[in-house]
Structure formats: C-alpha cells, structure tokens
Amino acid sequence: LLDHVHPTGWKDPTSQNKYDLVVIGGGPAGLVTAAGAAGVGARVALIEANFLGGDCLNMGCVPSKSLIHAAKLAHTVKGNQAALADAGITIQGGADSVSIDFAKIMERIRRIRAGISHHDSAERFTKELGVEVFMGRGTFVDNSSVMVNGQTLKFNKAVIATGGYPSLLPMPGLKELHQMNTNPGNKPRPYVMTNETFFNMTEQPQHLVVCGPGVIGVEMAQSMQRLGTKVTVLGRSGRILPKEDDDHAKTIQDQLEQDGVEFRLSVTEYVGVVLTGNILDNGHPEMSFKIQEQTDGKKVYTELLVDAVLVATGRRPNVNGMELEKAGVEYDGRAGIVVNDKLQTTNQNIYSAGDCCSQYKFTHAADFMARAVVRNALFFGKERMSQMLIPYATFTDPEIASVGLYGKDLDAKVVPFRTFEKHFKDNDRAICDGETEGMVRIRVDAKSDKILGATIIGKNAGNMISEITLAMQSGTGLGTLASVIHPYPTTAEAIRQAGDLFNRTKLTPATKSILRGLIKVQR
Image (cartoon, rainbow, N blue to C red; front, side, top):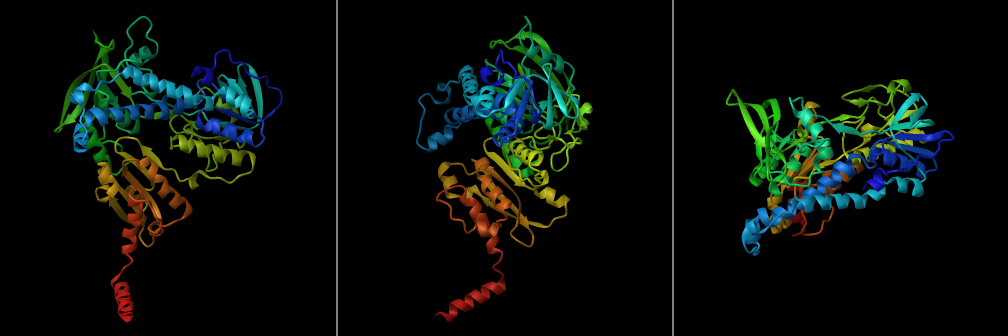
C-alpha cells in the first residue's frame, strides 16, 4: 500500500515552468481534478503530504465496506440461524460452531486496500497520466505560487482539495489516550480511535464504545457486534442518524438492537476516560469510560469498562498550515474554505473541492465537484454546486439511501408535496429473499409528478437510489416511472409500483365515469 500511496524515497520532479494547475491534496477531489486537467492537456502538479487516495481508500469507504462484507457473512451463518432453518439449511453444531478470525478479516481489508491503491498511486499519476507529483506539505507563498519541499511552484490556477479530519470529543483523558494509541512507546496501546486508526486493529476488542450515532458510528457498531464484539453506542440527541426520517432511523436502530448493540442516547456529559491498569486476554488495556446520562428526569453517572473506543462525532476541514492568508483565500475553521457557487475561493484563480469546502462529505460528491472545478478553472465553465443532485447511502443492514429533499426540508421551505410509499413486505422478490423490512418512499410536488426527494430503506437501497436520482436529474416524473418495465421479480419494481400509486390518483370520479362510458359504447 505505502509503495503506491506514499512511496519511500520518492523524488519530487524539478519545477521549471509555470503550471496551468496546481492541486493541493491527493484525496478523491484532488486526484480527479489532477487526472481530469492533465487528460485535456494541462500541465499539472499534485501535492500530497500524507497518503494519496485520501480517507476513502486508506481509512474510509474501502476498508469500512470490506469490514461490513465480513460482518454480513458472519451474520448469515452465525447470527441468522432462524432464517437458515426456514430455508432448510442447518449448520451442524449451530452458531457456536462458527468461528471468527478477526486478524484474517483485518488482513483481508489491508489486502483489498493495497490491491485498489495502484489506481491512486504516485507511479500511475506520473507515468500514465502525466501529472507531476510532489510528496510534501504545500504552503502558499503569495496569490500565485506554492512552496513544497523547498521548491516554489508558480501557477495560473490552483485547487485546494485537502479534505478533512475527525474531531475528538472534549472529554478528559480522551486526547491523551488517543495520542498513546498512535504513539504508545513501550507501553500497551490503548485503543482510543477515530476512523484514521480503527482499521489498524489486529486483535478483536471485547467491548467497543462508539461515540456518535451517525453514519460511521452505526455502520461500524453493527459490523463489530455481528463479528462478536460487545458494542455500546453513545449519543446526545435521543436518536440515531439525525438526517433520516424518524421511522426509518428507528428501523435501523431496532435491527442493531436485535443484533445486540446497546444504545445510550441521552448522554449529557462525557465525564472522563482512564486506564484501569488491567490488560485483557486480547492484549488490550482496559479503560474506565464514564458518562452522565439523563434518565427519567434525573442525571445518572454510568461507568463502562471497555477495551476500545471509536470516536465518530464529526469531521473538520483541513485548512490550517497552508498560509492561505498569503494567497488571499478566506476560510473558517469549522465550515472550511469559503467558496462561491462555482467553487471559486476569494482568490479568483484558486478553487476548492471536497470535504475542505463542502457540507457534502462524500467521495462521489468530491468527484463531481472536482469535475466542475476543471471546467470552471480551465475552460470558463459555468458549473454550479447548487445544481448538483447528490444521493447518499448508509450501508447498515438494512441499507438506507436518499436523494433530494426530505419531508421536513419541504415543510421548512413551505413546499406542498405528496408522499407515495411501496413496502417491501408486498414485493415478491423481497418475500422470496426473506428481506421484507423497508420501503420505497417518494415525495412529489403537490400538483404534478415532479419528484422532489426519495428515500429507500432495505436490501441494496444504495444501488436502487440511482434510478430515482436519474429520474430527478432528467426531469422524469413519478408517473412516467410507472411505464418503465422492470425485470420480475426484483425489488426495484417497488419504484415502478410507487409510480402506479401516483397514476391511480389521476383516476378521479369524473375520469372513471368517462372510461365506463367508453366501455359501454363498445358492448
């Protein structure tokens, strides 16, 4: 992996002429920007201080989905014995005969990550794409030049794509133990982690506490519980997945609780975390994790004895240490780089893309922001962030995926709308698969079939949402989707059937009377 994303002994090219484009940051946004610009003939420099591929390859999408895959397999054979029995399948010895080799699971994750990494490698970008790659920290010298490793790179245009980093809770003892996790010295390593270090584990924790009931938190909580770790999820708001509709969030929480995950969602204070001095059988130091909760109107202190902590309480943009002031680029420590709708910063020759400037912290959003930046920066393009339709998915089991506006968003905007739902309990393929939990929920304009937003909760929701995204992008209404022939039996039929529900609303009493009259005439 490191040979591709941060090769030792890498020699920077010698900068000679002015670059058409300098890109700071080698995550998804930076890589797409650099590859796209070089592909149309621009002279491009790419600067990366840490790992090419960014969070997605190294500590985000790729390793997390690999862990989810292993957890689903484990659940199928170990945690879902009733479904196996119903299908006529019996495992001799039952669930206890199925063993989990956590070290092998994590080794596979690293192997997959390494296998994919060539696509993002310094070698590929240099030899195949013609990008000049500099491994180091870039800082602005003035409004048209950047310094990296002692070299000054002059540019016509630049793109800041430095991504973000996980933020820690202001909890006594947490920061110190997190630092010990990354640099333990000669002491046992306390497993206080963010997503940046979570996938470095080799021994399975016995009790994992997850701080934050958002997407990362619930995905990893369910996976680790299904692999055999006791998991407790902590939060303050009383619920999980705050963006999602209440009933859908409850469906996910109910499934995680069925898997064995414990939720404590009324935390009022993270009191402190300390080492107890005990070393568990897996080699992990035990920790005392104390919280204050609101229970029945009273504040109660609770101590959890754990050997792993995952902090998943949000991310902040990487905007410090680049001398942005010298380039005339305004930024905010929480919101990130200040950009206009064309992703242009307060320096008209410098653009930004990805997590460092956007609320949409998804790889696919960074990808399309980068494409827009290439057009706008190099070809006088008019691409606008506000025109992008960005779907997203949470890869729990069941999955949940959304695009467009939620009902609460439409209510806030005082936009009248109607909702059409088709449940998977009425879908033949879902019944055959024994995966009947969930539904398709589509929100349309009150006076037409224009789709304003949609959510799918169920198996493969992340794949299914693309059909509705395409319909919204192309202006195809829900009524028209009813005429799209889907293979039978598939869960995607539920989308077409939601269109049928819409079309039935057009059968007013007057319309029905006319149709009856036409039939009588033909008798």
